[in-house]
Length: 145
Image (cartoon, rainbow, N blue to C red):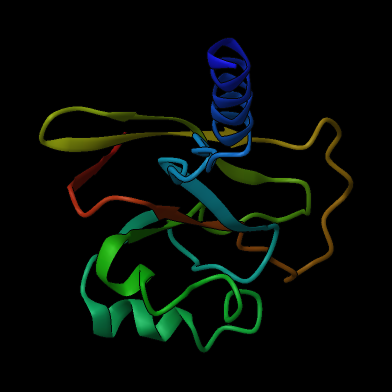
């Protein structure tokens, strides 16, 4: 009977181990997320703005494209970067994140501009302002290149 008890105990242990809580490795957030990338709606000059303070980030929550993409927790744990390409005379231009690298002290963002494959004749006095908004899941200093 001692052997039967050992077999039953071993079976119960295997059952408990097999049904135990599983740890997910997907809990970590990505280093960055592109929240929006638009061909129009940005600024007339090329510049990059880094939003680090809660009051600055709260302004983004009022934007129709972003209001459901920024949580209250993000105000404390993330920074945001606005990438403006400047004035363009036709659609098809984009400004995007080429890469993001984390160092011990900084987050380095490399930006990539994309031009349209073919440029149509521009309408007179019509301009477009491509931009992107990126969420960086870190509060480290950000450098844009």
